[in-house]
Image 1 (cartoon, rainbow, N blue to C red):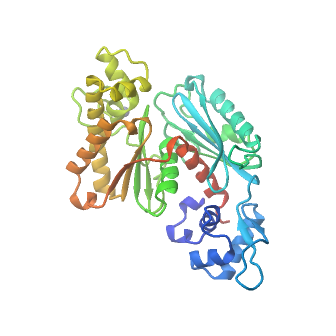
Image 2 (cartoon, helix red, strand yellow):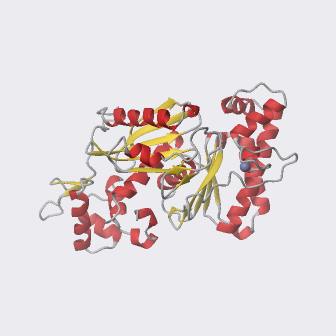
Image 3 (tube, rainbow, N blue to C red):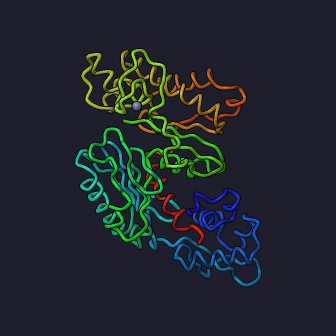
Length: 391
Ligand SMILES: [Zn+2]
């Protein structure tokens, strides 16, 4: 069982939370941890000792004294242990080395040709992780050089959570059925955890922006479209790992465009970046990729803007069902289409129109603010949760 599967209450003052308090500077001593968690000093000591023995915390003698013996000060070891993270997209991958608090130490973006197949693509990205992990001090004084504790990988397609296997992805020829976890396990001797990119974005955004909120929906709208669900403070994957996959939900569209899944009128076929590229080309607009579409929308192009509004309505329709059903505290949209104002405006309007007042009364609707590292941050937290999981 990973800590992600543990009941929320079991996490209060759990090893992960203790580590987070130290990493964020909220606590520098065992006394601080005891006060923050409400746990007894002996329980805190026990957990701190376990974290120290795992190399996840270290203790120095330099704490500030309030009169008596100077308390020992706790810290997350810098340069002691790092986590590798890969956020694979349709054309690019963000690769990073992060410390055990989930802070990015080194990261870079690499071009990717997904059609080269999983062995070539993942082999190159794992090699890049190894380079980043061994690459020494970062510009801000941190260090990526240390013991690799695990690698988290986000895939832009459905991932069966228990096995780490990709199942029927769109636009990923040669990847169907590929066992990412097994392939990577043969190349690095640390835990490798695989999930879909929307789940990683959800985890990264939630831990960064709203760790205090228990119920949240994160939409990732880029070349594809998907969502991640945070329920009772943890990532909700469902039975197989497909929870939150809204890409093939049917929306009102006339005519209903064909989808890669074989059906027609799926959200993905109407509102994803790939769908906008296709629709514009069919209208005779010579656009080559999503960047081109976003440029047209930013320039106020009539056709592109109309399509973005239509896409926003479609996302809003599906989201309205989700919000009515799930009653989240926050709905956040990320991915490259999140900056398209016409899409966001019509999504928001549709959501308010179609939702129960009780569901939207205090609902936050916002952009994911964590930037391009949100995916690798989520990937790192996936690994950190696994590494810090209690035995
Ligand atoms: Zn479909």
